[in-house]
Image (cartoon, rainbow, N blue to C red; front, side, top):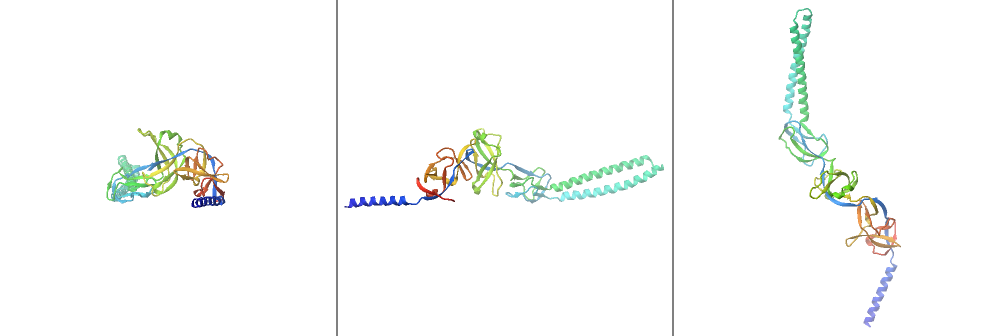
Length: 350
């Protein structure tokens, strides 16, 4: 009797399970229609952040540093002071030139009166032409001397303005090369300034991908260290290829964000083919099972598990090239984590 009872028990349990499954309500899911779009396939490559414009900023005059504003990592605006030099000697030279000019102006005024007197005496033949000519040429010489002093004073004022070295563009200080108290000569670099308007991601690519890189194309860029996603613009290729690997350097311009550092890693999604028609579906439709990619498509009220091969990742969209997913097909974007193959479903709104 025991074997018979056991068999009857398992048969009854199986029947109840089947009946309960048959009566189970369909799973509620949200779907989206697969579209078709002409786009290029892409590939994720890792590059580095770099500044495409770096200047070793230098001064045009000599002097001792009294104020150092170019601190490493500091954001600097165009025209902002980087270094201030001591101007005591320049100010003293300006004072001396002003006094010399005043002396020359006094001599000119004196000779001007002498010339007027000689002119009146010459008219009455009471003075010689030689005396008048000597006074005239001395007067002209003093006028030229005053002009030279004016030029020298203008140069000193220019030197005074140049004693404050300013930033030639908006940037970030990469390296400070001079400290307060140091003497600098004209042309000596005081810091290395990188332009924040010329920030790029440099990526090494195979030379057979060069024909797919179009200047001005927008590509997704990810900065893992900053957990930052942004859009970059392809600037072009560096004109020199690596002699051994035959790889090329692709430059992608990105906007500067606080925390970006030279040589920081960045991931770029670049085109790897000519534009072609792809089936586009949302990332939310993706289901990963045993390391492979699938989607649930709706057919005859049931969820069909279909394998896919992703050839493009663009924002929140995925591009696939091969069947069985076709344009116009509905794929599950919400509720797919609870589905089983061939399970009945009920499509609902979001």
